[in-house]
Image 1 (cartoon, rainbow, N blue to C red):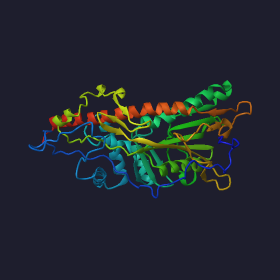
Image 2: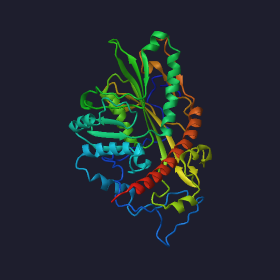
Image 3: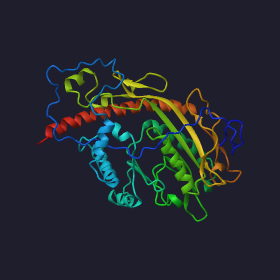
Image 4: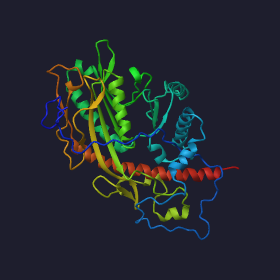
Length: 413
């Protein structure tokens, strides 16, 4: 990778745009969806004298929804299950039911955040079997297991913001591949939805699906992973670092791993109370049908957010997007950051970020080439995707209200 004033392989004298920081601890358990209540009233009206009239223009921050914080409520729900296996199995089944509109449990904000828990290798094998992961071809939920940390991570849905960077990298790498001789081109493969196992050492038993991977055909006629990208909006920085270690220390054939972190500030929480009655909800001016909620009606308050719709904030400001390149230390064999952290949004200038195919693929000097990235296109696409994310979140809120009404009508004590 070419950094400013450095050779293609770089040196360690590059000064990062800002100081590297790491979270102090890694959460052992991120609890999941709220349990459905079987004691809901069939009416959504407020008690007499308690009508709340809202000014939608002023409501740009989430109102208090309940006395118990959602996170505490979710942790209480998790305690109903006696083992990590049961927690994870219930979480996946509940998410699938929510996605297919079978019941009203949880909300989009519950499923945007990754679910994480400690799990034994034996329970992981059992979970894979019971979820039929060998045969399913669903892109999501994306389920990973790190045997070195006995950690299961479930990511239920992609973010449009997250997809913006994947689109950039896959597009540029695909163009570079098409410029290669036919015989070389056939030996290179880009993947976005493939699960990988076969990790070694302390990572044996792990399974991971990268956001983007580049494979190359080896001498035995088998595709092996040479380069991976892991990007995160809701994932923590430490989770992404652990991914770097998994790939570089658990698969010796991987030559390079790239980490990209988005920071949304403040983190999303649905600004509309799910308990708001219908009359108050109509005063907000939000359409009753999902298709009438459109990106063109969303307002990008600043260049990269926040994004508002009908006076409510649906996406926080993307305050930071940064990239780190990781390689394997030739002496210790451990993963380490290579070069400095690079900011991808102004005022940082990532225009000198380049990759050479020879940094991670076996190519001849004639086939080798430098890949540069159109960061202006990425920034434009990011702005578009921020509105897309706002629409998706607002529609999910409306869908949850409609499901609640259906559940109330069908409810039988």
